[in-house]
Image (cartoon, rainbow, N blue to C red):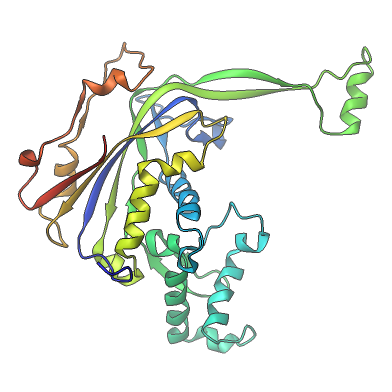
Length: 309
């Protein structure tokens, strides 16, 4: 398939990933504790967190390609790339609309031109979509890639550790501590982790929206590479612990509309709980519970690609 040709097929996928002694997604409303469902105590990783990791991976996998810039370039040191209206203005400059021509920016056809330019030049816009109507209007985009929250298979037990830093930030703080016994005691902090958890989420690729944004087969291959594990390799940090992809199962129907409802395909990949009394500490604990269908067990007209696992 040519690189610039939008997708012709729908894709639905199951992603399994795990964490060892890390915090996969801290909750700022709870002191950065790992997110969890208060009723079931299952761990949660938001779709926004997963998309951020995909973006970080794409910034490396697509490096050097002007079509694979990122709209939400939060990892870039250049602050202008974090200001969305300046990103929007780039589109108007590129299509030849002067920055001070306010009337031209109100015209629908000019907004459409700017929207098209944004889709062509920013991977995450043509993948995930964006609302670009703040100030400099580049319209709205519905992206073809949607990802659900990830939920742990079993309940998690968030652990909290006290940590120390033997340094201080300011001279005033050093003088205040030294007034005691003449020493600088440093500062205390907290670190939150999950001992082990296996998470599962689902994703969808809509070919109709891909046609609108220009999301191509080449873009799709970058997505698979990110999900296979590059997004964890790029995102290594002490707070994340050890994270990796344990399963990536992609269902490819023969038609744009699909040959089976997504939930029926997802049900074919079973990741059963180990039980309320279990204390999983490694992926091997789940291997006997993981069931992936064979080719003959998948619905007619649907191909299963076992990319990982």
